[in-house]
Length: 225
Image (cartoon, rainbow, N blue to C red; front, side, top):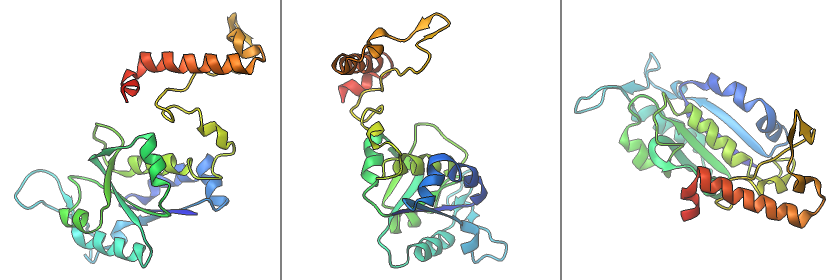
């Protein structure tokens, strides 16, 4: 079982996402375990303050080291963990990276806010920084949810149909081919005849061609890789 420990100052925002659909079922089936920790619970400040102004001046606030040092230390305990900081300046998450993260049984995810975290936290604990794209969000909570979802669905037993992972977009640097379902003719718009032919070899050939066509049109950069 893979355990995700998420450190945040807004723990309530995770409730809806982690208690629905596949992630809910994965937790019930003990394929994954998700624990959300309120960073303020680890603050020694009487007002539970976790941030302060940056040395050297500049706008915004920075997470102070004490709450994060204590939170990570207690959550980690004696376990071997991989600590991730959700950071716009981190390595952009791609499918292959999500797959690589499945090898870790214990992931601690830090959700940044404001101007980030004290650099000493990064130097002492953070194994890698991850971004979900070249844009700025109000905090690391949404990226943390994306990361947990992307990694969890690749773990054995989480998806009901493991074979569905094989032809997914990005699995082989091609976007997924178009898919259709009943009815075969909807208001005059028909499903491609090859998909109704029963010829599995021809269907596979069509799917590969459509994946290539779609990738060339929408993500030609993937073909360069």
